[in-house]
Image (cartoon, rainbow, N blue to C red; front, side):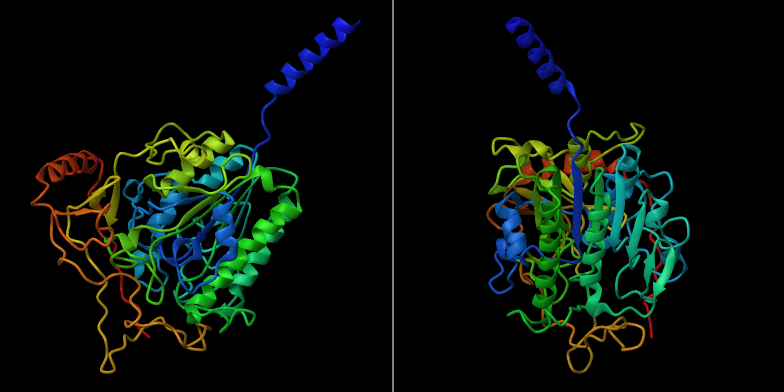
Length: 472
């Protein structure tokens, strides 16, 4: 009898071990224009971000995480498809007020989104916030794999600024002071409704994209002005999501990923990096990335391995076991090995940075080669030295505080050798890209250029999207 019981127990253990593991929930939180140096855990001396700091302490924080393009939509396409933007033509920003071509731009129908992949694997899929991959009928989130959507479908300064519920306009004009709070409430509601099945929550925050706006609870409360207020409310939002997961007992079965779509705009901080949003310097590309999954990712990991936005797509695939169609190139690689082990190396030897439809640069763990000259946004100041933003709050169509930042609040380094073709920078010793060392290291230039040319064979000739500057 004793032997029989032991035998049955052994069979039960084997059967239990063979059962598929419970599918983890996935939460992707994407900040908008958050700079590399904007968080406490990334060195900001004034902005307080206790929730994100705790998330980093309980998980992994990356120091060499890049986006593939230094502005919004291309990076968002990379996140949703796992592919470099040039592969799907999303190398510019859709804009309802940017002329016919920018108005019509969207993620092509042939592309498969992360939401579609997970939905086919049995996941509930919800999105809150900024989509920016097409705002016309047929191209909105609920038509690209998400069960539900609430948010502004493009940047919060692109007229008409309006909130959609699914495909319907439910608010215009938008009271932006309560936007972070309302996005958070919607995210928490989705988690609550979806707790009985695996889910994907994509929370694409509005802040700290201009125009900056915060609720009364955070307005003028930080030590870093309106920008600091906006980031501290963003941090509160992340804390609310983490608390809800814990409250519902979902904490240990949820992978939470936090990052930004590109570097900081005026008023923010790119830390020790050169440039800002829209520039091909590191300040445009390198952003915070924090990953948390209790029991799977060791606490307190600081990862200096090279990674890029598309890797989040591949990481989610590995974590969930979801299958992607095998008829296309995926540029992302799973980060699970480097998240779990300090001994693991980056899945990339090289990563590449876009300048609109072209590849502008290539970098590895140490070196960065600017094949094309780095560009930086040029805004013409008026007589008072200020730039007149045509998309500034007007109290009628854009409702937000008037005290926005200007040219005197440059977020990154604005010094160094003038931009030119074929510049080489040693990021290990010169993270601010101050000194071109191409003549001292011709062998590195040759090696990086060979890898660039190999990748560039895949880059199609794409006509640049004509964009009409918005005028009041």
